[in-house]
Image (cartoon, rainbow, N blue to C red):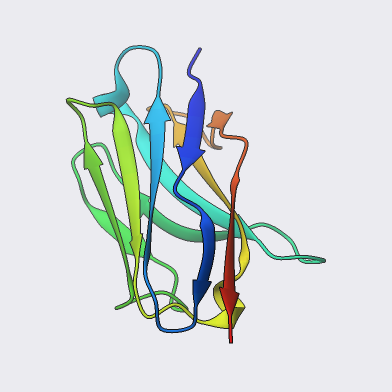
Length: 118
């Protein structure tokens, strides 16, 4: 079992930056594919970024060039650096972990609110 706890959300003005962190409990963090997702009010949860176990990263088009996902396996933590934030980035951000061989993400955090004011 893996527990994920996000932190770092808050209120920021457009153009500003935030760094989210997701701390994972349990073993074998380095073997997990770690993703960030977000859900805006009244909308479905959508993919933001992912880091494979080997560190290969992929981003949604909407955040490419502005957001950076990284991981520190020694600290069992994955980060999402968000720069040049826009009001449309306002959402609850969730991290998730996927075990090797899983078709879906196995574990989810509780989410952290990011609000970008114009």
